[in-house]
Length: 339
Image 1: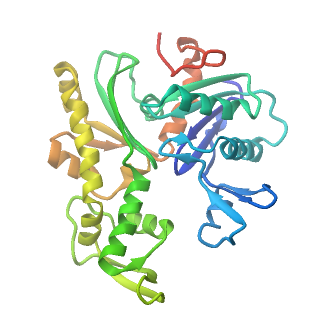
Image 2: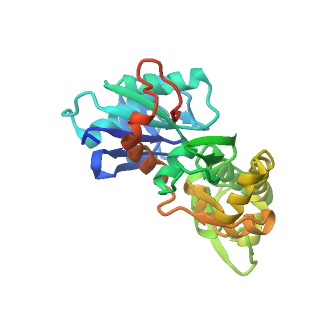
Image 3: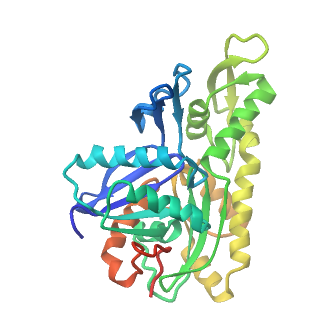
């Protein structure tokens, strides 16, 4: 693996980049800010994320990736270019790039991803499905005839797949993940407390207060926002039980998607999954009590991958070692497929 090889997990919430043998060299929000008058890019990543909700009208702060796919080509190209320059400067000469994509992505959406990579100048471009990358990144041996199940809960999509003998046996993807859960929290605060909070506050609530297995009224946190009726600053006490009520529908939609994949899986592989358990990756894997809730609901053991947030990106990096067994996606780009 050359030191200039780049692996990119192009997520809805975060972009994680690996480079050569260095491992993860960048992990920042998928956000870009630009001046609408001059159309000049002002900041990307963490610097742009800090501007959310604090920007004047003529400065736009947006995420060019929505629900796992590129929604604004030009801004995505600019954002990726700025990230690459941040980690490598101007010394990088036509690297090989592997980009991670959701399982169910159209040819048009795939082409947008490839064009974004081409915009920075590359020697070869590969695309890899998120479930395969997650398995490789977690160190699971997927070459044998044994079933492994992965549930990758990202920002825009939840990808679920059964993998055996280097291939995806069955899979399913839903557009319910971290960002959707954040929006449900915002809506709950509006409906119950007539309080407006921002996405950053909602994400913070989710990280600190989520308990999906055994929520309690005793565990609380202070939430600050703006009263929608009076228009003045306000704070309320939110409990674990209330938060569970806010995100219950989204959580069980993910569990139902897992059930659907299990129902479509050959019985021999279901037996393997019962023995191995399922693997949770992505930021959503860190929701408090989620593994125990899945076990109680579906009767399947759950394991959270080590470094779940960066697991997929690490898989893209390790995939360079398997490049001889994979189809080259530079001229006629395709999803990574094992021969």
